[in-house]
Amino acid sequence: MSVAEALRSVQERVTAAAAAAGRDAKTVQLVAVSKTHPASAVREAYAKGQRDFGENYVQELLQKAEELRDLPDLRWHLIGHLQRNKAKLVAPLVSLLHTVDSVDLARELDKRLAASTPTRVLPVLVEVSIAGEEQKHGLAPENLAEVLQGIEALPRLALRGLMCVPPFTDDPAGALPHFQRLARLRDEHGGAARLPELSMGMTHDLEPAVAAGATLVRVGTAIFGARPSPLR
Ligand SMILES: *Cc1c(COP(=O)(O)O)cnc(C)c1O
Image 1 (cartoon, helix red, strand yellow):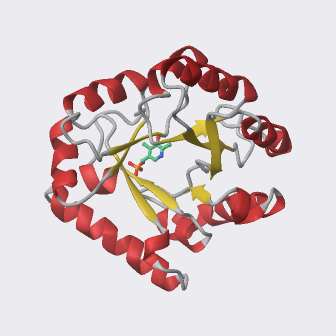
Image 2 (image 1 turned 30 degrees about the vertical axis):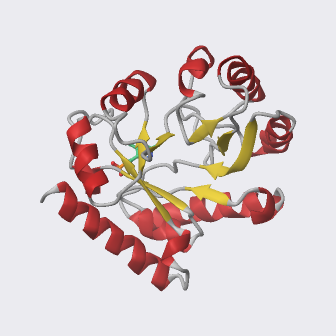
């Protein structure tokens, strides 16, 4: 299947999932996750109207952004963990950072923006470790209040919502309780007025994510094909 065909079938999945949940499909934004795939694949999706692309690794993001800088309205999302020492590289570049998980990282981003692009405001999501798995990134739900307040105190960050990666289950429906938990956390911390975006759902489980209220789904494999290594 070509990228164009695969993209269309994912758009259809999103539309069907939204309809099944009684939601307007326009309230679910598709982020095409292009990690490990070449810039040419991004161009193919872009030619079909896709504008939001997600990357996990800072070096790969920087390289692809450079190769694709002739596409000015392309929006990059960083969906992988960000180390503080790389904050200055991505802060001026990304449209949405999905993975803030500490006040320290938020402060570093604010500081780097002040130095590089002082008028820029960076939209961010807070990554929550929804099932409390030790090896996963993201912060524990009990620390959420403090980090949300910490971000709101920073002039160059705009708090936009929450993000999670649930533990893998063979049956996609197994992810539903985790997605519902993220939605509930949003409601407990100011609701959609304070946290309008919920970034959750990937190739395997976008349907339960949309059912639970996802506003951003991050889909790689179903658009670009399998990745070379299971680790990536
Ligand atoms: C790789 C990745 C995705 C996309 O996963 P697919 O299963 O290929 O759709 C989404 N979110 C995150 C955080 C990822 O690392």
